[in-house]
Length: 254
Image 1 (cartoon, rainbow, N blue to C red):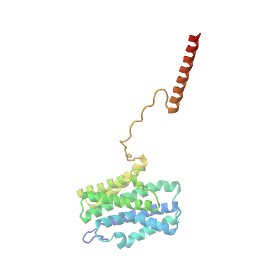
Image 2: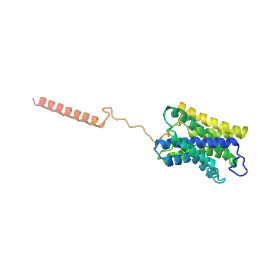
Image 3: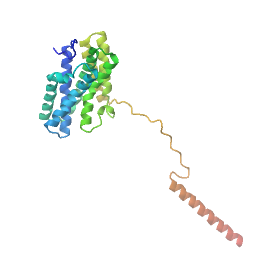
């Protein structure tokens, strides 16, 4: 079977999860292309970028040979198949709205686990494995969003996404060290995907940035909330005072 790094045997389950993530993200890229009203070339480019972008970034950072997307034609073929399916089938309506969260979560869980496992297989430690697992899961979607002029969804304003990828990668690292590679791949995929679906269902979001430079607004005088009101009242009091002085002067003159 597949051996992306010389001397490292990659289990068959790794290949299945990796290709599943490619197809799932390619479908998501095709859905974005349809929303942007692109042609077949646009569908293909967004599907390839979305389906293979995270893995290419991971393999480039690992420097363990050429990215697997360039050496194994099955990855590019899977991405193009996803593009053709998205081009031929219109993903919209209630059915797609119900299926989309699970497709997205499956892709995230698969790639978080696969990316972390490959990083450990190269010989790096647990911290790079967790980080590159998350990069594998969210990198393609971020590049896709930038390609269409959008702010990447992982930057905030949405339910937990990158956090779920980190949790899936961390689960693989812990489970693989205790049980084994196959169990780690399954556990990492299940945890990442389940947490993503649960966060979307419950509406879990990270807090936004807090600004400590905000000072309380100075309180206005009790005579009025607005400057115009205060000025008018002062003018009115001055007019009344002058009127009273005139009355007293006229009385004294009598």
